[in-house]
Every structure is written in structure tokens, then in C-alpha cells.
Image (cartoon, rainbow, N blue to C red):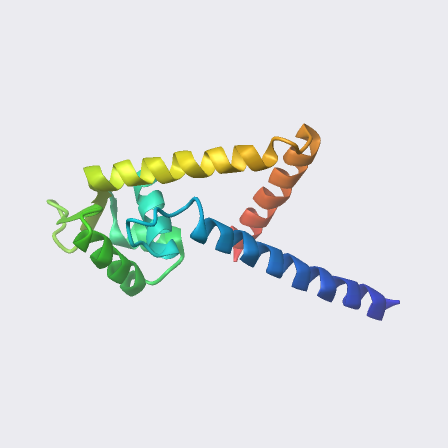
Length: 149
């Protein structure tokens, strides 16, 4: 019987992984990114996180994104080239680099957020309230488990 549970869990894991990847791909190729602005999905996620956070240090940003400071710095460099972010040294501790979205970055992040919320609302319109609440609870539980790792 344990083998049956393992087989079922293996199939569930495969199905869940494939579904998550297709959803991510749908956001990548659809509503998350504007086609006229060349942003990778990680760059878009950084821009959205930074826009929500306001001005923060690079170390805090990399912690929030769960990437190394080197990876965050490379993404920031690309967004800086596109005029989406601003970077400056902390006036108190010059070793600390502070980052924030530029006006252009704020506008794009706001547009992406509105577009995606509208898409999610559209997708969940036909889903009963109880199922939406259960789905959100499962996602929040998973998020909490990832935070503990």
C-alpha cells in the first residue's frame, strides 16, 4: 500500500510541477511583461518587489528575492540601463547601496500589477468563493513553509 501512496504522490508532484511551470510560462508570455520593453521574468519580479518595498538596500532586496547579491546586482544593472531603477550610496554608511524604482519603473510596475490583477480576477470569476479561499490558504501555507527553509 505504501508503494501506491508513493506512486500517487509522485504523479501528483509531476502534475503540480508541470502546472506551475505552465502558469509561469503563461505569465511570462502574457500579462506580466510588455512586449515593447525587454524584461526577463526575474527582472520584472525584481522591479515589482522593489516598487512595493520602496527604497531598500541591495542586501535586503537580494534576501527578499532569495538570490545572491551578485545575481541581484546584475539584474539591477540591466534595469538601471533601461532607466527603471535608481541606485545610490547610503549617506550614513557608504558601504550600503540603496535602490529604488525610478518614475519610469514605478509606472511600468504599476501597469504590470494592474494587468496581472485584472487577469487573475478574470480567471477566478467563475471559481466559487470557498474554493478561492481554500486555494489561497494552501498557497499561503506553502509560502510559509518556504520561509522556514
